[in-house]
Image (cartoon, rainbow, N blue to C red; front, side):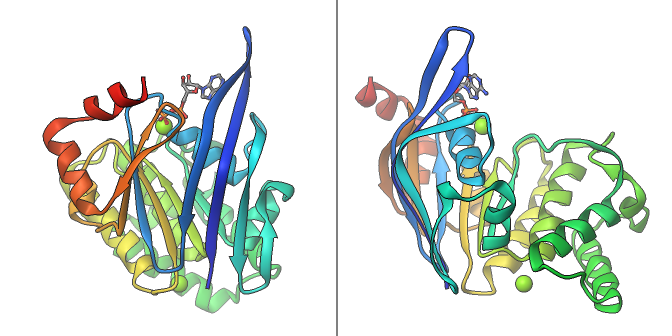
Length: 256
Ligand code: ADP
Ligand code: MG
Ligand code: MG
């Protein structure tokens, strides 16, 4: 079981013109088995929220709390290093996955799995798991020998993120625009991967997206409209349909 609880989170970045507050009091609770979609216009702070939960050093938390209630009790996420957060069961699929030249996909995944579990995975089952993840995501086996994200197409990057999700098996997955840049076939394959993860039943998912398209494949329990660094409105899947029909205008105006 796991609950990720974000309370009144304020986050700033340092820019040339000084500190700029990006998150202005985010409240969000993701309980086990729940899928939450965050939708919002460009620049509203969605990726900042994802990075702040994962512990990216560029973002300074100036107020609020993030806690993870897991099998080992309640953890103060903000007090943990990036590695500790991953070991505690938090996973972030980045909007723009970074290249790791010279490190193959196979080595990268094995190293990450070893770091998270505290011991190397058993070779036999690991190879089987990797091959089955690749097969389900319809990836060429040769892919595992390529350098991480180097020269990957948009679709390959996103499939690789979902491959990590399936193999690392976190408690809570934050997926930042995992749907962007995917054609319809890739979107279905990636969504099926997320749904396999969800089907384990006890997982939390925070799905950040611009578009309602992916929500046709991955059904959210809750939809949050994110405007100017905070949640402007929350509802069920019907809220996504309203956004599809009328856009963000109503929410942007209300928050201005
Ligand atoms: P979204 O993901 O919703 O498009 P972001 O979280 O990427 O929004 O960005 C929110 C705002 O914060 C934008 O105005 C962006 O320019 C600014 N911002 C984000 N990260 C940084 C950074 N590292 N340095 C300066 N400004 C940043
Ligand atoms: Mg973003
Ligand atoms: Mg699993």
